Figure 1 (cartoon, chains in turn blue, purple):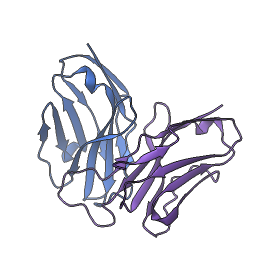
Figure 2: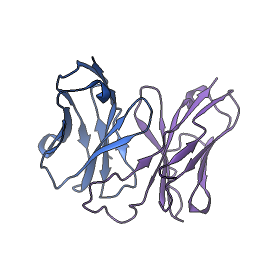
Figure 3: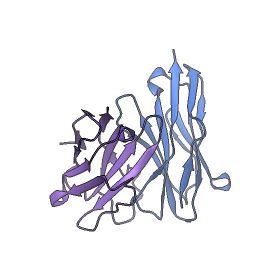
Figure 4: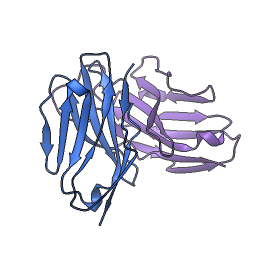
Length: 115
Length: 121
């Protein structure tokens, strides 16, 4: 069975600070995919990134970066120089077997960026 | 439309009444999912439709919940005899990527609607 744990329920930071959102996953498959989604107050989930289990290269996209470490089963997400617009709930998710059949989501981390 | 459309956006109902939530997926998407998001909780998988195959109902919490997808497009999630614990945001998502494995294209497997906020009083 697959499982995703986001231990941080809520995080508050002041604008321009860096913040890391943790994600730890469990799976028995050797092929799997990891995701991050952002859910702003409007409610719609916005896709941020997808990473497959064979690619441990870290990803950077603007102020966003992701650190994938298979040794610790973690896929952490860092926002550099946070902004108020980054305030949202962030979900980490896992899908086994190379299929989108069923994503398992973590419980989410509420990030609040204060001006 | 350009995205997944859900209606109504908000629904308030009395305990014991039946409700129907509608999802209009992106045209051409063969896969459709329903998720539930309770206050302060993550997303809980409810049901999955793929083409003409039998749906995966493994996430439905009770027999009061049912869903259908007519003509491989629009889906309706029905909750009978609603209870207060059914209050949540119900999210629908669709995907064009199944059943084949994903390609190397770094796109989302799921396109979500804005959800229906259900409040049972």
